[in-house]
Length: 96
Length: 300
Image 1: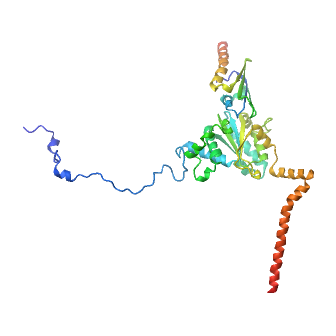
Image 2: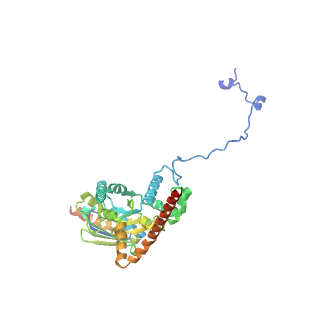
Image 3: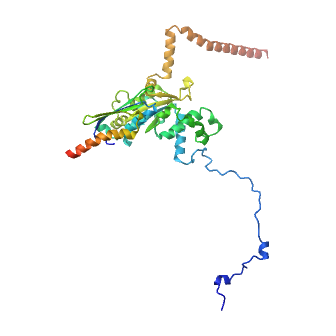
């Protein structure tokens, strides 16, 4: 996953729901030094919450991606985030 | 001209056709009684019976997880996200120091409070055995927790146990040797602070604890409540609630104080009177027997 262009991540999940798996895996994909370059918020929802999990990513250019990960796999979420990161990467490469 | 045969055949002494002597020397297979033999042992006698190979890492881990679950009254389960080795070391050191500072017997408590990084699927399998196999008292039948029977009999719990949903991704457990709210509070303040981390803590430990997420806990009850072996599942908020309670002694004192303040003096006196009455009766009986004994001595 490309994390260079992410400035803020908010992940919420209810650990007692089997649908929280994707959101939890997303947090574990962030590298060990990620907290130096971005703000990471992890919200643990109460046990009886209906929501399984959600991921909210803010990029450095201000674009926001909000995903309900209850019915998504981890590769889908990574793909969604990388799509915008790649355009930013290309822009970076062109401007030098 | 000599016959054109290879020299080996020329030197043959055994006739090519069977002779009468060859028929006589023949032996045929016949049944012989073999003494009863013990079945072949596939594992060392010191190893309990196991589903997979006794020496495999999975079996050893399963056994250590099972013993961890059976022996810890309070087990916190949390997620760890890419911590570095130095961060783990700093966190463990801070935890040990905080517990040791708290009480006089803190050294022992600190040694028994342990962080274990687990393999989630294996741990979940061990948890099924602890919840299903142990509670059905099958442990007393001599079968081990790693046996094929234990696996088969607890397989149906796979989707039923509430803790099994917590056990995905990178997880770890923190085990405490007994349920004590003050100790739990110290652990939570260091590892999972609700509002900002403690001052004066190692910066490496701070960067480590930012990557931890408390998921839930398994509590096996307290001796005082007579609820050992219950295996109650708590979520993060409930764990914090428990940590806010006082110790058992404090709560007993509070209860007595409340009873006395609302006119429960009568009640406490009544509860005491059973013991008092018994003590008085026994004392009276003892005196009577002493008198009888002394009376007998006089008669002699």
